[in-house]
Length: 140
Image 1: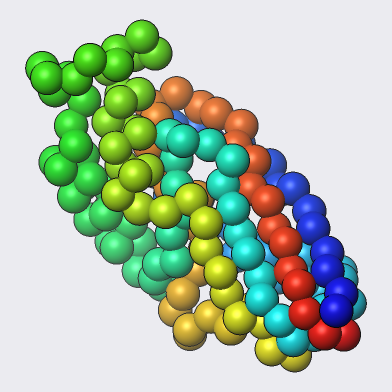
Image 2 (image 1 turned 135 degrees about the vertical axis):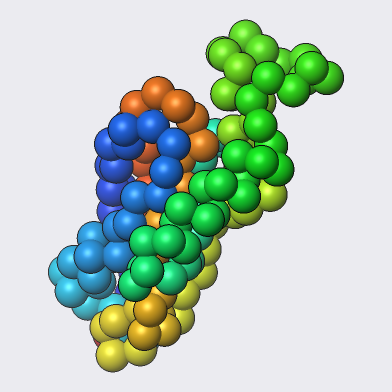
């Protein structure tokens, strides 16, 4: 068994989806694992990870709109407001999505569908520096 890990830092400009599929490809090309399992993990509680279509930007627009309507800022029943009106909604959005994704690796490449990409889904309004841990385990 071989393994490799790397931390990727993504700078966001506020709410939105930030694709990092090419970074995953570079990570996989730089390590000896040919067949195994890639785990991608987000080290934050107010953003999340998605595998989503990367061909039509309207998908991103619709996802942002859906989550903005589902969990809007300024909900009057929210108790946690110390970090601003968008913070607790960001935590809820993160809880509804995921902070870790596992992807099979075959022939040194993550097995993604034709139109699939990996995204950091930033749920906060302000810019942030987010850390994504990439870890692959498998055979060389």
